[in-house]
Length: 368
Image (cartoon, rainbow, N blue to C red; front, side, top):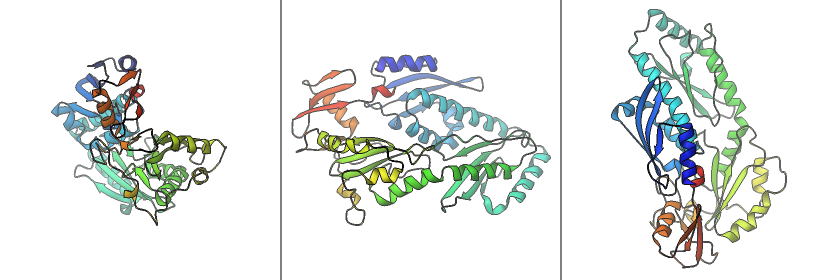
């Protein structure tokens, strides 16, 4: 699996090569604007992309400095390394274009046009403007009162060329633009996009309000998943489709096998509403009014911490009498160190560190 991931990565990113047989280290170059930049990507033992570390030259770090939060979002949302490299290349192209533009003197018409556009739009919608008048952040409120921002990176040819738009959306935001358009046109498209995502955010907000969400700890508006506590060491990971938020969500149960088996049948019927699907589970969701999050947030049995690189324990002993939770990375390292453990493809067979009963761990090698 690791070798297959390396081959896939090489086919799509020929300048990025795996440095070990486990697929935990990749090194090479990313190309943008005709320039090659040295990069090294280090993955944890469990190959979780969201916990990857990126190493690069100080020059590339400086170029991507303003885009760090976007890259972190992409690490969490991309399904595999190849997808992330495509996103990285896109972000780098935008960053390079804006970096180059900083050295291009703007004509007087650029400033007069931008100020006029901002006045027409209304200064009350402006959240931020940098001193060089090259970056503008606009704020908006959707019909449910949620606050949103759109960041516009304007190049020297504005308004002949549209600004690059950065938003916290679960789907791509493509702007329709003509030279005679203004910022108001982009803002209206932004508002329309907000309304198109209303049901998606409504569904996730309802989950956040009515259940105990274990992960993500601080969800962004682009986050499509929620890991919800069901009981002691049992939780469900819900993946909501932004295009069809009320359709049956993709669900994955985490916990001892007895919990998964009991709950997995509850999603077999064709329900039309997301919250209806979740409420019709054959178990009760713990009440936020009666219980605390700490009742479900159990520490890892190996490192004795709840958070490890931002992740909560997501593996549980298969024996329901034990049910001890572990971080996947901790359990992977533990089982790899046991002489009695054996591995078949991406599944490791070993013993629970607590009760010594048989335990299996499916690693994330398939993600690469």
